Length: 138
Image (cartoon, rainbow, N blue to C red; front, side, top):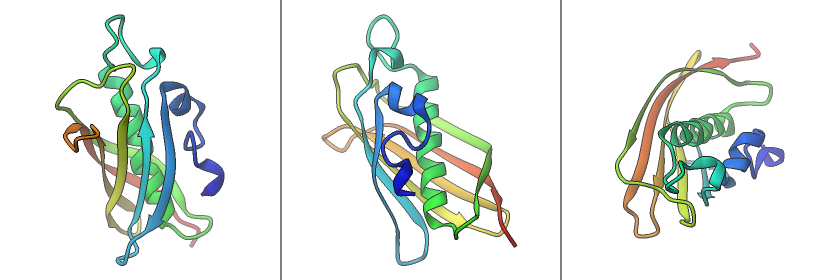
């Protein structure tokens, strides 16, 4: 997993201004990831506001990374089954935001996760929840 810190293994995520910096597994064997988002011009409309689809890309990457942090060697997420995204306030170029992704439930074939983008004050900018298909070795 360390090799994917930074852009999460996806060049687009880094080019949008997101960086995954820390990850781990909590006491219930559920994964998490934290990072920061400093939106680039690529992430925004001509007025400097981050587009909804960019939020979705970043939030999806956070949830996938958190799930992979909890899985055993050789197991990985295979795809996003469904995802719900909410944008509560604008993120803008020049701002710095905190990122967090958490596994809510890890089953044999699917995982459920949540992710959030927050302002330095702690106010939620955007959030998502999703269900992900898993590829297991055995």
